[in-house]
Amino acid sequence: MSAVAGTPAPTGSTGIVRPEFDLADPEFWKLPAPTRAAAFAELRRLPAPVFFTERPAAGRRPAKGFHAIVRHADVVEASRTPAVFLSGPGVTTPEPARWVRALFGDSMVNLDDPRHAQLRRVVSRAFTPRLLERAEDDIRRVAARLVDEVIERRPEDFVTDVAAELPFQVICNMMGIPQEPRRAILDQVNRASEHIGVERPPRSRIRIPGRGLRALARMQGMVAELGRERRRRPTEDLISALVAADVDGRRLGGRDLGAFFSLLLVAGVETTRNALAHGLHLLSAHPEQRALLLSDLDRYLAGAVDEIIRHATPIIQFRRTLAADHDLNGTRLAAGEKVVLFFGSANRDEAVFADPDAFDITRSPNPHLGFGGGGPHYCLGAHLARQEMKVLLRELFTRLPDIRSVGEPELIPSNFDNRVRSLRFTFTPPGADAR
Image 1 (tube, rainbow, N blue to C red):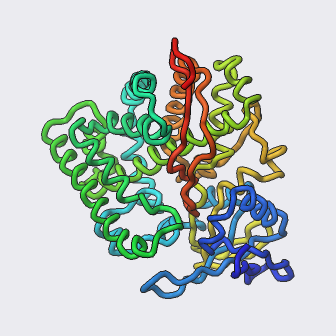
Image 2: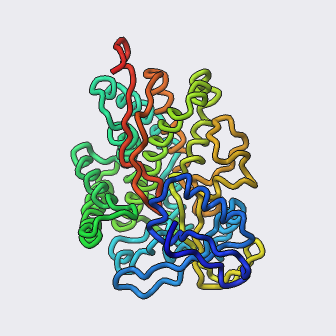
Image 3: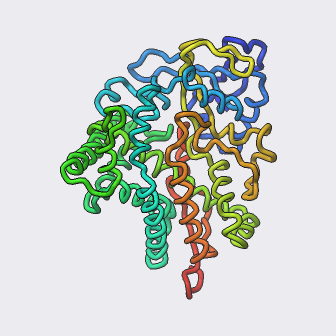
């Protein structure tokens, strides 16, 4: 599969047969999904985590590499032991540069306690029952409007015109973002994340970091200005609640607000968008599961949403850094070493899920880790994401019962998120013949 193979973890895993693939090699993430799934199944059968050596990034000192944490139980343990498995050095690959964090502020995913707990309390206080109730009503309105527009315009790309629009419009409504700058904000989001995958043309590999940071700066500037306006004239939106929240004397400043909005757009828009796109394709590729779902939406819809999240796993991995020596499932990991939690592998763990590669909307229980492995970094928006998926799928399959994907989704090779660039789809409009 790759010219560079993984190596056994240097501590506590001697005697492990070297695998013939390399999770640190971008070429691995361009392989077909079944091939990658088989590689992770091989890793799960090994008695200890495998260590993969990373290539040095341009202009940086060589990275030491990481231990691949691939089993469900191990991912859960690492997630729920935050005092040992730190997020502060950075959870993405590569880790964010210090100057970028200083300039744009720290996302909550890159914080540890006590600062993480303090900031999370500020945000949690802002998510009042009244705000969440309004958000759920808004999800229904936006979903109905989107399906109206689909019927009227008959677009061909499900990702751009449906899956991305619902979470983006819902989050903008929650935040109180006026209609006028929304297209500009979405454009900046797309510019900042257009090369999130590992496959980049050589010219883009050089130029995109600057473009991405400029786009992020513009987006955060827009949100910071709205925050200043809401401090002067508060309304009943999330920005007003966030700038007014006070927990232990802590309020969100402009950088904090921008960083939180950026997190919402990735965690709330990108992941839900990708889950919805994978969901339509999975239900199209498994007509027996689709027929079961449509036979009783009330009974099967919640299970279908969780199975889509498990099977697709929108976020593939997060990184952690050990604060102290730790024994993980009999393997001794040393302070300062890096581990990568592979949520997609955990969601196919044979020790937890029967026939894990099957798509089964009746799977119960379904303890997937699509929103993280628990602990303080469990996704704040898990309930909102589930609601968005349930409402939109119900609206689509009630009004357009034969809606289905056409061909395979166009995926962006990535070691971070299971991103869908586009997905063609078709349906029979009410009262019309199939196109």
